[in-house]
Image 1 (tube, helix red, strand yellow):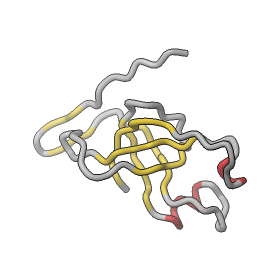
Image 2 (spheres, helix red, strand yellow):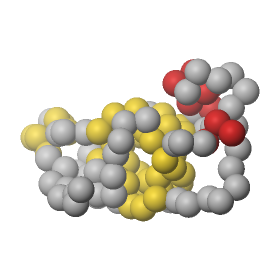
Image 3 (cartoon, rainbow, N blue to C red):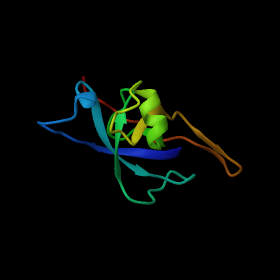
Length: 102
């Protein structure tokens, strides 16, 4: 699992059936200090996360397919949780507060 920040959303007019009705987010890994690290990738959102949220992502095909309950689904990464805080030996870090319009 990886700690990531949501940096965007993706839009597709034609998509595999398992993606119908699901949001696909662009996420970028972050370190323990919540600083960006690594390359961005796509993850299916199972938690109603939004841009700016810090999330926990499973980046492994079998786990992703189990979470969407489809063993043949062409899915590799899924957002499994929205992070409220990160506790490390250096202390507690809180992700930036995200203000969303409704």
